[in-house]
Image 1: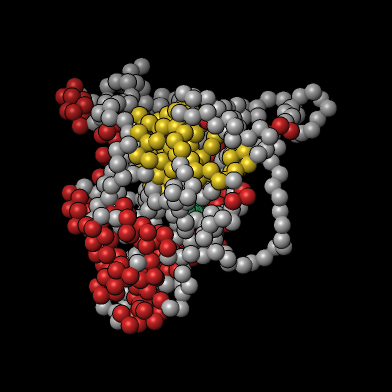
Image 2: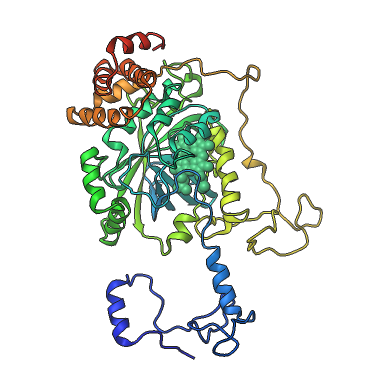
Length: 515
Ligand code: HEM
């Protein structure tokens, strides 16, 4: 039986304010989660007009119980996200260097889901705040899901996973005041000279993107490409936006924020709704393992780019975003992107940050979303899943038969295939806890600063000293200015002046750090 839920007049005015895109068909019967029709969704079942509500009102109890559990833990980092579906098209055949499915034929298309995100600021935070931005791409290949979980900036603050929780604690709100505080994060970064490169990028206008479509992306780490014969080479991935790579200065961001604190999400969805699908070109840089020691920096150091003048980039594909997800929570919030989601042909490098990430993401997702999160629609591979892992909360995998173990002589169950073994890699040396030998903490920061236009340099100095100037401790302001001075003398001098520290102290401090 159909129920009328709104008068024609109300329905007409609602139609004007609600997006029609994925609306429920008119006048469908409301049901419980069990599928049973609901007779009254307005009045609880009570004992007479004045009596209490009855425990047997199972619709009310189910409705409240579900509502009580509507929130799941926020991502510990990258909480505010914007998702979109799209397609990746290969423009080069890379079979000679990798067996990875998306790169096997020119023109081959692979479905993708992309999630852009803030890093530090929370789920409801303004999108106009300074933050690196996540640029995470899930490729649904016929050999399983491959997640390239990168950022919009090509480098990172630190080079060892051991430092990540401390760094994030310093950047997140103070546990006492619940306010983000430059006194805390610059205290931390004054011990981390290798962060100078990333901080210089972050305080440039690119730290507040104008539009998600006008943003480059980077896998940041070196990964490994391996081919059918297990020949391996290091590879870095970069997304170059065809719409440009643009950011805002402090005044521009304040202006945007005063009228719209969702400018990134609304802009992306508007472009897609208008059919102006944003496109990125994917470039790879590859490095023969024998060349790992040929540079002044360590190519497995996430605080460094691979300069294209030294290691050329080659275009291998293009990404188009063309569909807004039907439901924010189901897709964008429940997406589980993990660097450990790799496919044959792509293997991890020894990069110490990547090694930590291989554990951390799947671990947090088991906590945030549960052990069976891989069967949620956004995470479910398009490839068939034949696994003996079973049960647990939210278990929905269709499986039949008694043989839920391997190996078996029964002729049933699944078998492993030696052609997909991980390639062997040579090892030398002994276990150790040692810092990187090649640090080169400041060179690329200076090169980046000098590559900026005059007005971007001015904006960088203003934004950097705006935050550093809030730091009460003279020593911290002096050390950070010394890091910038080592990157570029003009940059260091300009910031030192703006944050009121003595240039003689900055120069003396700079001498204590090697180039
Ligand atoms: C050892 C260093 C790092 C650790 C331990 C770490 C840890 C995490 C964790 C726990 C999450 C939340 C995942 C979830 O709840 O689904 C996350 C999200 C994310 N991280 Fe990292 N991270 C590290 C470094 C990096 C780096 C270097 C990048 C960029 C290359 C990066 C990019 C991202 C992105 C884009 C997301 C959001 C993924 C999404 O949209 O769902 N992280 N990270």
